[in-house]
Length: 408
Image 1 (tube, rainbow, N blue to C red):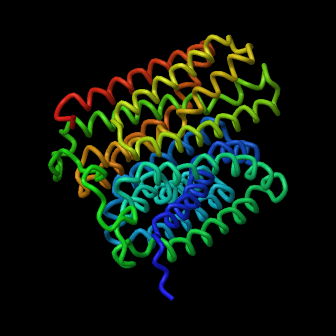
Image 2 (image 1 turned 60 degrees about the horizontal axis):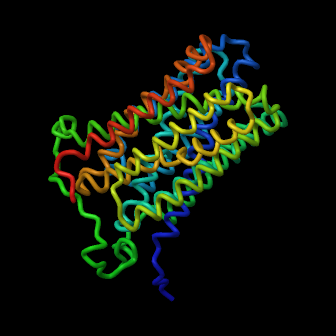
Image 3 (image 1 turned 90 degrees about the vertical axis):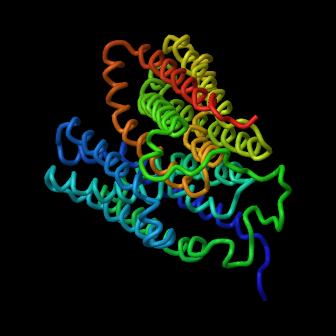
């Protein structure tokens, strides 16, 4: 019997699982890998940290071309490849006997991360949702937060139990198998193949449709477009500030809160990220200016950064306030740019915009942990000042993109 239920939400939950693995291995994994490689090989921390940067930079190159790769091989095929490359790449990290082998492994793992990261999630969701796309993207991107909650401690536990190579084989193999099955079942065909339409509506009212207000921007015209440049710059600034601060947060919390409570504090930030992303996704599905929402999200993280600064590194109440405020905006920094792209660009341009914005921001945040580390070596408080100032700049740039031709 033919199942006529709207398939889009099942695709969304499949994308959620992809995000769990994609971020759990490709984003939250490298900081753990850095420690595991340095401890087992005795190589300089700077060298292994450079490999982490290489992983993200390689991913940025691949993700910039992801729409072309999807067009050539299909979303299902590329997702399957991404799962396999991630598994092979991580195993390469574990088995590398010399630095050149480590850097070769980062090329593979970085490609896998690109094929299972933000631009890939957007490509999975977009065919199925128009009006409800913010809610669907928010749900799918919550997998990124869950990936951090699950995989960060899981990597540590499995490496302790099985060694780095054994842990990589188990997690990498599981990722490849799960994504292979999900891709074939949920990403191989769009709504037309099932006789369905975006959002599951036969004819949504005109007021509910999300139509871009600008013409298509072929070729290099996109790079000269104000809406694109502001979106790319603002997203890069926001993620640079966020990744830079988060990379040092746990170690900053250990002294005033203890190691166990510091871990719980990081978990609280993740819970707040899920709450913030889910709430904003449903609110924006009902309408609203997405660039103003992005600026407001930046203001929330500015408040969190200032609470961290005001704590002096020791006032636990203010530290917890900073975790909550910064955490509520944490997830929206990745999920808002695709929502803005949907509103500001034609459907033909949206996938390319999301891919290029993701590539630009990933290339930027690859250097954030090191940059914030330099600030921290001078004075710990400077990383909170830097986070607030960079987030302020991001909010202003988001708003600058709405001044010309924005729909009233």
